[in-house]
Length: 276
Ligand SMILES: C[S@@+](CC[C@H](N)C(=O)[O-])C[C@H]1O[C@@H](n2cnc3c(N)ncnc32)[C@H](O)[C@@H]1O
Image 1 (cartoon, rainbow, N blue to C red):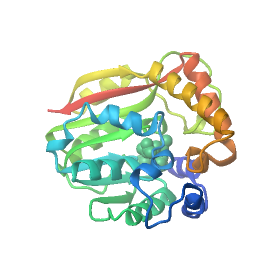
Image 2 (cartoon, rainbow, N blue to C red):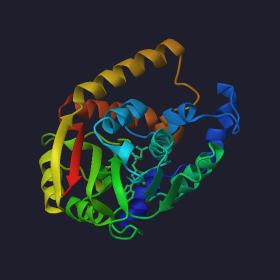
Image 3 (cartoon, protein in one colour):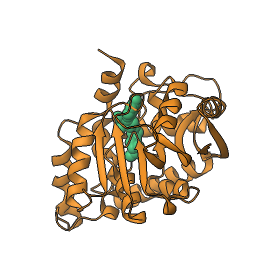
């Protein structure tokens, strides 16, 4: 099996769209009335969800841009949010066919098809022309991609000079044996974490200038603490949540990830880069 297939197989649910649609009545919604906010707990697959997306967006100057790129877009939750917020077109690309098919249907439910287009493909060979985008971002994707030098060279190729690019990935902080499974990998074979220093080097090689690096360790631990309190007080997770994507292994994957963060082996980190 190819490496890419192993990665996308890890994320495949099998019946994802139906699983999301099936819980809409529990939040009092239908496919006609569901909103971007309603879907955020299930379609923003990164630590901190919408809160974390806002943190990154606040450091990017997307309000002035017109054509944006979401690398490893997943279900496209962030792409729809960005498109609706700035009234710009967002193209998303992701390896997992089921995420792209489901994500495009969710965009259709929200009448955002004209603003958001999600394509299946690899971030390492994107089906876009050189200098196509005015800016972009990547949320929790690099953990599956070993060759960061090629990744950022490819991203640089499709961005116009002057573009800002925001990264929010889980990165290696120090050596140590990680506990698996985690949300992005069942074992070490598809877990390709790199240090912030390695990201910076790869970005600089690709022609980016770094303006910000923020370790989001405390934010992430606080987020999970609050989530645990909320889940316990409600007697379980809300109808729409990341447990739908991760199914039966959700608690183990998230618990192991938090343990790895607490051990200081890994941490979510934001990097803001400018293509010069
Ligand atoms: C943890 S999910 C994050 C999804 C989305 N960015 C979000 O925050 O909701 C990681 C995503 O990266 C995608 N991915 C991993 N390797 C990729 C690659 N080489 N090219 C494109 N997408 C990739 C996976 O298919 C998966 O959807």
